[in-house]
Length: 172
Image (tube, rainbow, N blue to C red):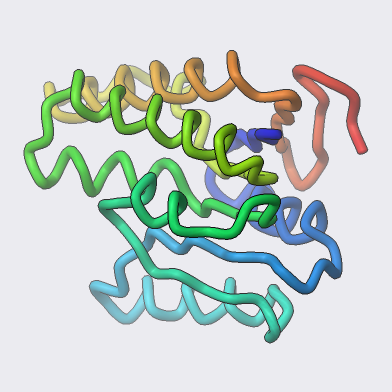
């Protein structure tokens, strides 16, 4: 089952993902952020403090579907976040079609392995149209990725100011 959490920056998506995973002992947390500067290192440290110490963390910013394929069936997985994964692939000059194929593979792996995947992603379509071609490509591509994930998800929630609003499926 896929549970997609969408929202703006600092909307409570990651906190909600941790709450949804609950106190399960076999949670794998996929962290896609790269600690490139002090501010990002601080954000990463804050996120680490929010989740239980016993959870396994995999830091992966590129080959997410391949790493998911190695997990035991039925594992609960938090993918935080899709936004940074897609940005990394774009930075690596991966074509849009190949990125969408990677997202489709992510979904296929999650289904085949019967993972409980909680995917966190930014909703970037509610803001202004970016002034640069790269920004518009990112906004368009992430919108397409989110739509693909939402179509296959059993649940979709939009986080607004820390409040989860059910978009698809019943809220837990």
